[in-house]
Image 1 (cartoon, rainbow, N blue to C red):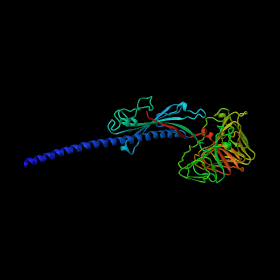
Image 2 (tube, rainbow, N blue to C red; image 1 turned 45 degrees about the horizontal axis):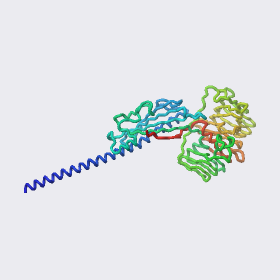
Image 3 (cartoon, one colour; image 1 turned 120 degrees about the vertical axis):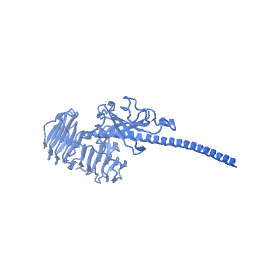
Image 4 (cartoon, rainbow, N blue to C red; image 1 turned 180 degrees about the vertical axis):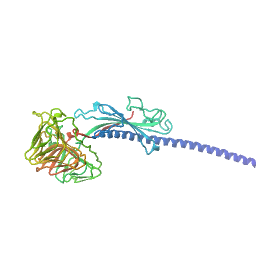
Length: 486
């Protein structure tokens, strides 16, 4: 009996050991599968995160480019250099990561200004932004599941595939990625172009009011014979790019016929029955402030316009002889301020800075002579009525108004009107802009940007798309984007 009991106990022990061994093998295999799946999921998540990091590097570059547009230029202060004139700037930052165990991501950005990416027409520089996001990954330095998947995602388990020396995209090897650290990196390249301040027919920081008038807002392109006639607006060739937008929340479109998009900042548009384009609520564009010009030398005379006067332009753009600083302009009756140029009508240039107020009333008028291209900066309240402004070229890009931001923050107004035909573009983001028309039905050709914008009277607005390639630069926009998967 004792022998039988002993044999039974031994059999149970053997079976117990066998079962434990089998369960251990199953547990080990299950643990290996779970571990493999876990690391694969972590690698996949890291792979996705690094693309976001690379894309954020492009955003960081655009932020620096926008800084360069401000009067107080602080761009590239923490970068290796300035990317202008074909140079290269290199920046690196560590991005805190709430997930993935708090592992910080390295974002390395390389910005350059290739000479071949310069617009020959307006001289604007396009920039090339190359950005790499890198994140260390946990686990062994070998593929746990599929080598093909590892190669497809370009996960670096042994060596950093990007740190190949100074001729690569990145100027220096990754600080986090050494030969002993598994990592995942993704890199993107974006081409960024300048955006004109006159990129819309109307843009306001606050209220945009079309005063319930039966007006028409559309577009044409003075550079294209299929979209204009002899460079002038032709209603039979009008386009649907008369876009209007506000950083505020309300646009009163009223009875206006808007042949273009209407955009607000999470707001509403009233009177949208005649809007042909998209209606968006995701618009926001911080306007770059305008500072008073600081010309090293100017034409010293005249310093004041009080009555009729002539200001002469010059064939050379930026010539001190064609730059004037005026304390104010006051005209009435039949006074005429003429901005003159070459007698044969060939191109000439003039720049004027008015530090005080502008007042033109009665039958007085401002005349832009043939061939003259004018830039007018103003700091005080600006009001032109009477016979208004006569742009003999009929090209809004030849007459640009810039409202200088007041240093004391006091309110400013810009009122332009008088005659029934006006060609000009206005960029005054700190001014309340009002366009008036004294005729039965007038036409305005150009673009208007203001703190608020209001159109009074039956005044049709025809936006010249050529303005989007001129004037001052107000922003930068991505025009192409690609991920390098090499």
